[in-house]
Amino acid sequence: MATPEPAFSLGIEEEYLLVDRDSLDLAPAPPGLMEKCAARLEGQFSPEFLECQVEIGTKVCADVNEARDDLRHLRSTVAEVAGEFNLAPIAASCHPFSDWRDQHHTKKDRYNALRDDLAGVVRRLLICGCHVHVGIDDKNRRIDLMNQLRYFLPHLLALSCSSPFWQGEDTGLSCYRLTVFDNLPRTGLPPKLDGWGEFERSVAALVELDLIEDASKIWWDMRPSATYPTIESRICDVAPRLETTLTIAALIQSLTRMLWRLSQKNQRWRLYDNFLISENRWRAQRYGMRQGMIDFGAHAIIPFEQAVEDIIELVAEDAGILGCLREVEHARAIVQTGNSADSQRAVFTDAIEAGDSTHEALQAVVRHLIEEFHADL
Image (cartoon, rainbow, N blue to C red):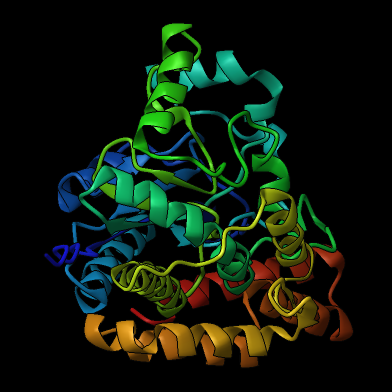
């Protein structure tokens, strides 16, 4: 008897930074902004760890077109309300020049506990990410698919990189965010798990020792959601442009269905050790799309463009069924034009060559990020 097909529903969470429209520096949310956004977005908006951060989340979406409509509404509303306070949101994983030492955490019990528990590590957490949920009802299938999806996490990261600058310096990395986040416990690639039972027992061991409250404190690059019947991909930088986010979500959704489809033929993706996958993770973090990816089956480093073509070919059937082939194929355009880290560096270089100071050039990058946020709305 055929296994019922999972819903493969989509949910997207994004974190944004708030900047002052005049100085372009980070700005804490003033009284009234959070309350107004929360009232207009009805449970889809919340403050984040730092006062200069906010988070939004789509509803459960049947497909990427539904996700586009909801995410556009969320982004537009946050931008509109922020504008009333002379602020603007940017969807970049690190602010180009602001100092984490100047930021203050949100005064809520949850965030106070994080501050006390994680000390100096969490005070540097001036970073934003993007999380994509794909609905899979069966718990053991969630784990099985997650084990296979690990292989593709570095490719998704490379497309999303938006954090080349940190505290006014070019870090040389395309994704500096992970160097900050990886200092937290229970981060990095998820381990290979034998099933839901192993995951549940592992979490229970930490809960029983009063080290964590629940699975929401497992911060792997991909995890079974602690709240929803989903696989939650967490590795990506937040993307300045709406359409980039939707491409990444469509790829995750399509890859998940592709692996499920293989399982219906008693086939699966080869499982590689995290030791090997971590090499591609580092390549994505350091170089983005510029230096290619290791194809472990071919025992070769292939151009990232080829890696993307291989993935599109793998998931084309599934993307067609899910109604997101156009978004999946948009990955080619991202490869051609570069990810956000590439475009931020180009803006910075152009400003320097035009005679701007370093700080003025970094301000130009922030202006570019504001424009990118509004580009697809």
